[in-house]
Length: 122
Length: 207
Image (cartoon, rainbow over all chains, first blue to last red; front, side, top):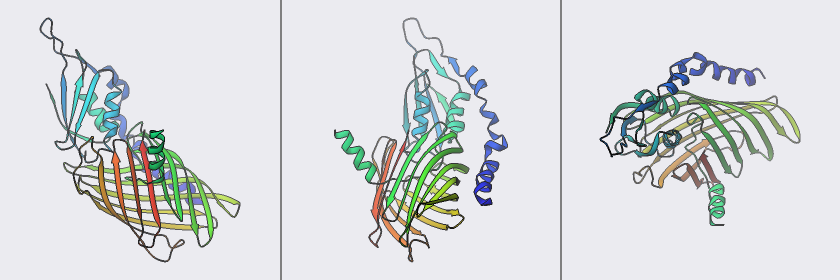
């Protein structure tokens, strides 16, 4: 019977959660720094910026659904495109809004479990 | 009506990329069925490396049916995110009860799973142990699969998989099961039949 109690306890003890490895994901810090004002546009034009994120480990559309779900939950995001062929996630923001690199990395690394290799803006 | 029909078909076919932990905030519903074994579970990943859930496993071994109900705790111990591949090691566990011949007793389960996957190749090894005062059962499974074509993010993906598994309490022989896996967006299902004629079906959805 000792196994019944011991094994879940061991799993929890071995987990990164118990080791405090997730301290970097500090939710409050991310929230406070999550919105970046988009570059100001010429009068009369709407700015709809885009971030292109290179991601490692994205080999399966079923598993990568978490990335799409997480970004779609952000009010700043208009739409998202996941490209498995080029290992890129393209985030289209609403006019005048963006997410900073820290927030993008937190969503892809800390929440979805993938690795960010590059972030570029258009 | 058409949607209900599709849902029923999915439920009674199969699934299984079977990551015991998905993404933070993700819920996974999984149902596996074969003639002498079924597993149904719901898990919620409260962290990208930890999930809690509940499940019921049923086995038919030598004429005796055992049903196991668990509260589960799963962990993603290690993930390798490579440019063209992903590999994972998971630990799974459960605490609950086992019912056999209308008699229940305290029970547990523990397992380990390792997988490696590219967009064309997939392999998985899994070992699980169920234990109670009177019953001790081990189950080992190995899978290798390939995709006949590389599917895009919004395409239906199709995989051909060969599964071998062994449970000494249920069968004398290793079961060899060719199966097909399909997934589209957040829904995945698999079905096949072992060369001994044992149907296999599995369904999984990420919410």
